[in-house]
Image (cartoon, rainbow, N blue to C red; front, side, top):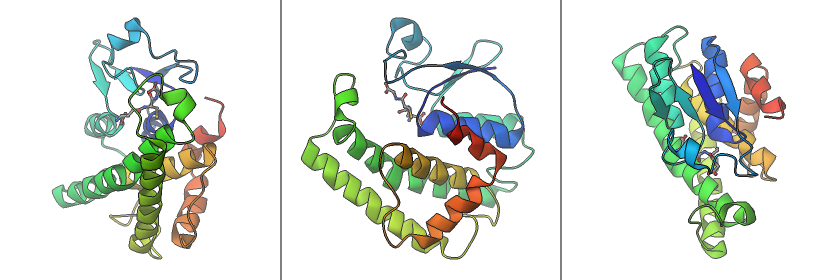
Length: 209
Ligand SMILES: N[C@@H](CCC(=O)N[C@@H](CS)C(=O)NCC(=O)O)C(=O)O
């Protein structure tokens, strides 16, 4: 398998998932700041021209980070990162989707229309600076909400490491790479991040790529 990857929370989420699963893949790195991914050749692999894309050995192309993780879980269930029962899987998907929709999307759109505007405006539709500030504020409010949901637990759901933890961790780490930090009142999340940092898969965030 081949992973088309870059900086950013989505490819790094898949890379962490791969490390947690002990799966090795060939990795092709794009410099997205330079726009390496915005070329016709890559558009043939991923119509959105974003990373990650997982190319299977038979040439099948999978995109969307959580979808790729679902594929990896199905094809290599051990260690379980989504769930061993239907209820556990539903729980993980519920939390991964909440974090994605309520936190990661407003956070990303806020960044792209705000501080990231010089990079993103030429390559995609971005919201106005005013809307970007509102989206960032909504995302921050939802991080505080997530902090309350986490409480004193080590993991977001199922009492063990899941995809939901990895999504939350990757977006918090992404924020750290673009000058954002967890809002005040998120001590539970700060503790969660410190614990996640000790996992070998967190090494992905310490590399250049
Ligand atoms: N919904 C997609 C989002 C992918 C995405 O936005 N990837 C970013 C990196 S985190 C990217 O490729 N940005 C560069 C660009 O859009 O040119 C997923 O879950 O994989």
